[in-house]
Length: 204
Image 1 (spheres, rainbow, N blue to C red):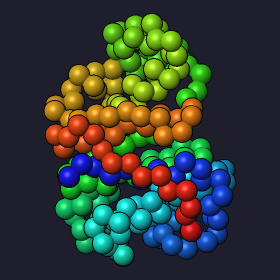
Image 2 (cartoon, rainbow, N blue to C red):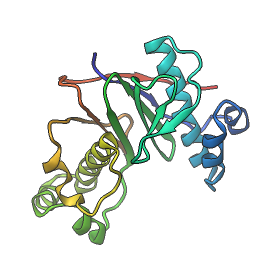
Image 3 (tube, rainbow, N blue to C red):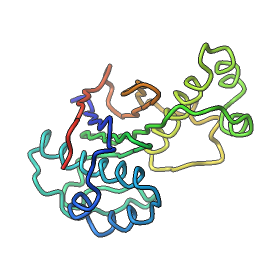
Image 4 (cartoon, rainbow, N blue to C red):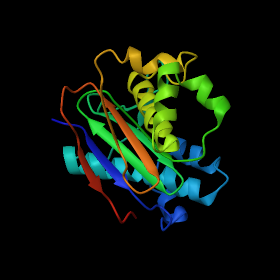
């Protein structure tokens, strides 16, 4: 089956006090470190999307505890064959689930920082961004693909960021804009031509 992506396009209405009671103690501790309310809302929304995805696709009403792979990537201790990945940016959250490893990243399009550009993009990528009609979006499309791929493999950010996409090793990558001004990329081990996406407008 193709990966499934759940998208919360507007997390600003999420009730933090109510939602935080639904997540694990570890997730709650991570959320409480976030200073801005909108960041807490988006982080909680991503976890609630995972709950929704597990119930919708696998019929799992209780995800149970989660553990971490040696590289730090989380997995469900009771369901190790189900793979998931979460991401959020201000006001938007996404969750990907699949039967094989998956990675996802979502980011808002922001002004380009030349120093960051030269550090994380190859010369070919920099040229492609410069030639684009929208360099900021072109940068973010490449950046989210790199992040999704690194999250797929569980490697995290590395010093080889400029070469990440040339070392994809057969991963399938898809990039799309879930809402205006936001870019999302998904990386999968599935040899598919796409993925299934579901917009979730209301969360507890």
